[in-house]
Image (tube, rainbow, N blue to C red; front, side):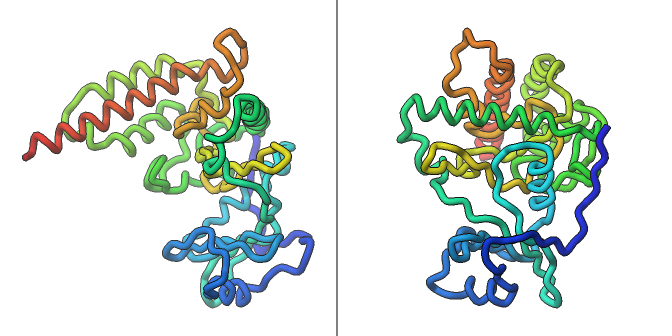
Length: 293
């Protein structure tokens, strides 16, 4: 089994032009004309010039940069080049400087693409997911170096793990996402979970997973190639988990028919079942709210 260790910081790599300093980053972010991509409390993402995207703030996590380097090391997948990663003192802000990838977010253009273009994207995603799954596994479910999963609203919500078994992983996911159903006393979620366990029993191996692979995290270049961005959530998860997120399976399976023997089609029933879980959960919670009035 593979063993991974965090990279040494500060990290710097050759860049096409001089990197912006921390003071330059902050000054540019405060200009009215700056190109702010995301602005949240303690977390800004800004495009600087024609070469860089900078993420900085106290809520930035270096896991993203570490994951990008891991993917670059073990695969030929196109990801933004990581140029710098460090913590600025005395502000305490964490800074990640990466390559700006020109193109259009798939979220903004997918609906306008024809069947051939969607099939091309599907083929690229299947190839890239296959490469990710060949990254050597540490034998557990968690971040590569054994740290707990990061807290994200769409996964575990708090720092948990790593887990030694797929059943522990699934229990933690269901507890985080469907807790209100448990408090309302409905057995439907547990019944659906049991069905999912049966369906997924041959797809539980811990594989490297982007874990936030939706159309807003895929850039479509002018030449039709794609670049996956936002690797902060990536970690080792059960095989099926990549397809728990809205639209991932439909994009990745585009261009395939039921008669094809592509391995991705084996996840179809699991995808439909987890959608059923979410729809059932929403109905249970809605019914519980109404009954209290």
